[in-house]
Every structure is written in structure tokens, then in C-alpha cells.
Amino acid sequence: MTVRTRFAPSPTGYMHVGNLRTALYAFLLARKHKGTFILRIEDTDQEREVPGAVDLIYHTLRQAGLFWDEGPDVGGPYGPYIQSQRKTIYREYAEKLVEAGHAYYCFCDKERLDAVRKRQEAEGKQPKYDGHCRHLSSTERDKLIAGGTPWVIRQRIPDSGTTTFTDEVFGEITVENSTLDDNVLLKSDGLPTYNFANVVDDHLMRITHVIRGIEYLSSAPKYNLLYTAFGWEIPRYVHCPPVMRDAQRKLSKRDGDASYQDFIDKGYLTEALINYLALLGWSPGTDREKFTLDELIDAFDISGISKSPAIFDLVKLTWLNGEYIRTLTPDQFLEKATPFIRQAVTREDVPLAAIAAVLHERTEKLADIPPQLDFIDRLPDYPVDLFVHKKSKTTFENSLTSLRAAREALAAIPADSWNDDTIRATLLKLAETLGVKNAVVLWPVRIALSGKEFTPGGAIEIAHILGKDEALRRIDHGMEKLARAPK
Image 1: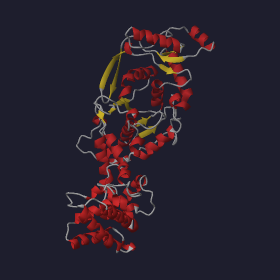
Image 2 (image 1 turned 60 degrees about the horizontal axis):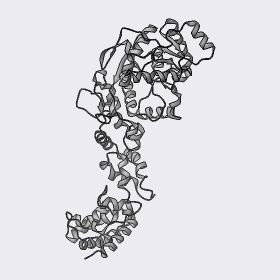
Image 3 (image 1 turned 90 degrees about the vertical axis):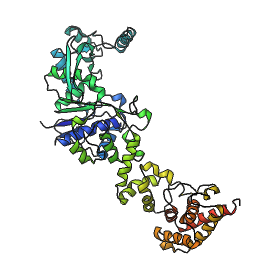
Image 4 (image 1 turned 30 degrees about the vertical axis):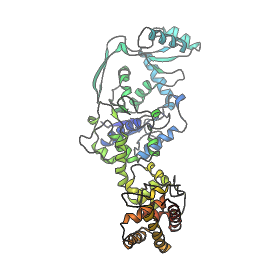
């Protein structure tokens, strides 16, 4: 058997991380077994479709490295791969079910259905279709159709008995047919519901493994009844546990960072996010936590998928992201960090590579970068008390002395020699000459240059980044503040 998996998203907005995890598992399974990964766009819910969402799906999957073998944009032998382009196929198969007695036309309008639902709820019953149109004769049906009465086609669920299905994660499950609803297969606009289209498409596209969220587990008996009605082979089901924000709540767009793009915008690396998503509800059977995509392909096995919900741990993801950031080369980090640096730094004369070098080992996610650099374009109005630091043993008096001496020493550095090495040598030599510890010189210089107690780099790196003229100007300003400080 050639493994064929599919990812079938609806184009209704950004890619939720739970959906991306489903795509990842389908991709990994196909690649692990040298099979075929298919992308299918399920756009039958036209009212919820968001313009541009299909392109966003393409972009997200490509950025994540989940390239598909068949799909709307690459073609394949079982297209079209967009459901709205397959209307005639669904109509044909829905009619076959009607002819075989496994489905029927329903002419109930919304008002009647709402009334039935309200009555059932009032009686404490689980709302479901009451079968009003199940027993219409072909003559009655044809008359209503000829008269232009709107209709849908519903699945005819057996009145009694049970349906059993097997899931690769949850095992064998049996349900009473009486608990199932005669769900709509074909809507009044001629488009299928998900419950019908996914069965027809999965069969015609020869899908061997259906990987999807646990929310579809309760519908699997209806799908099996359809497969049986058509006489088709049932694929292997793999229902994945939900991704939770905490023990009570599912991860949701309404609660914050629930989409792939949200995390990318906050400076998480695609590689780290994919690595983390793979481990949300799946275990490689070891304690290992860091995997490349190729390593995930080698390690992936359905047996590692858990039945339990997976808690999305933002702290863990952030730690893992930091691990990935630190493995980047300086040039790779500079490329990824530059857009975030530019959110805070607009000056064209600052060396971005020097800024990136300071940040590389200190960054866990790229969105942490801009707040650390808010002093580069403009020196903030800072309190003079920052010059006093007990651990560094600095006071107003010795800080002023250090700044005066540092100003003179730094001014003597030629402009073309203004770099970390020269600045470091100059300031450390100055501390030795003054007979004080390095911090007595470096602390007041850093405060004067940044106006902040905490900075991503020290006095040496900041002086280099600011440039000679700006560094001297800020030191002058610091001396003025200290000259006015209370004695």
C-alpha cells in the first residue's frame, strides 16, 4: 500500500496552530513511508471564506517546509483539489445514495427545523432531525422538486443497530445508530457539507490515512456508514488530541496567540514552532526535544500520538526558540533580527551587525529586540540617580570623574578606529590609570550612553553602536547632569 495523506483546510483566515499540527502529522506520515502528501481546499462554507486565505495557506505550509505532492496549484491525477470545483461530483454521488435508499431529499425549511429543535430542547432531548421527509414517496418528492421547493439531501441513518469504527489512537469505538443524526449531505446551494465531501474526496483521491482533530471523532460512524453504503474501503483514522491553552480551555484565536502568523510576528522561528508542534500530543519515545524536520520524518510514528489533550506551554516554546536562535550563524541571525531592530532603530549610521552581535546570545524571541533598543535613536530623559550603583561602587563624584576622563580618552580615538576592540582597550586602560575597578568607569559610561539601568550590551558595545560623535555628545550630557546633582 502506498501511503496517501491529505491536509484539507478551510480558507477561513489565519492558520491555527492546531490545524498546522494536523498538516505536520499528515506530512510526516507520508514522508516517513515514501508516500504522497495532498493539499485539498475545503471551501464549501462560502459564507465563512476569507479573501486571500487560500494564498495564506500556501504561504504558511511552504514557509513551514510542508510541501505537497498534489494540490490546487500543482495539479495531480485526482483533481480538482478545490471542493467548490467538484459540485457535479458530489451531486452524482448524492443521487446514487438516494437511489440506493441510503439518503433522501428533505424539503423542511428553516422555520420548521428551528421549531423542532426548540421543542426537543424543551423536552430535554438531544436536538436532531425528526425524519419528517424520510418517507416521502418518489411522486411526492418529484412534485415538490418540480414546484421549486428548496431541498437538501440527507443521509438516512439506520433506525437501529450499532456502528463500529477503529481509530489508530483511540482504538475500537461502537455507537448506537439511534444516537446519530440524519445529517445534510448536499446543501440547497448544491455544495456538499464537510461530512459528505470529505468521504467522497478521500475515496476518489485514494487517501489511506485520514489525520484530523478529535472534534471529528464523533462523526466517524456516519462516515463509515457512507463508506459502507458505497461499498468503498474505509481508510485508517487518526484523530489527534486537542491543543489546549490550559486544563480547561482549548487554544483559541480569541484568547491570543493561536495562529501560526501570530507566533511568527512575535519573533518565533518557523523551525522552532514546527519542532514544538510536533511534540504537542506526540512522543518520539525518548526525552529528546530538538528535531529538524528531516529528523522528525525519521522519528515519526502514529503509535506515539497521545490520547490526552496537549497543553500549549509558551514558556517551553520560548525556551526552544532561544535554543534555535543560538544555533544561527551571525549572518543568519542578522537577517532575521534586522526587521525587529528596525522597529526601534531608524538611524542609518548605526552598524546593524554590531547590534545583532550584542543581541544574539541574549534573545529568546525576536520580538524582545525592539524594547531593548529604544535608547539608540534618542537618549531618554533619565534620573541622575542611575549613576549611583552600590555593587559597582559608583557615586555622583567618582562617576563625574570617570566620565570626564573617559570623554578625553575616547575623543582621542581616531574615527576610523572606533570599534569594540579599541574602545575596550581605551576604557580598561583608563580604569587602570585611575586606579579603580573597571566597573567604576564602565557603569557611568553605560548610563550616560543609554540612560537605562539594563541594556543588551555594555558601555563598550553601546559606544561602538552609537558612533563616536553621538557617544561623546551623550557623555557630555551625562557630565552636565552630574554637575547639577546634589553633593
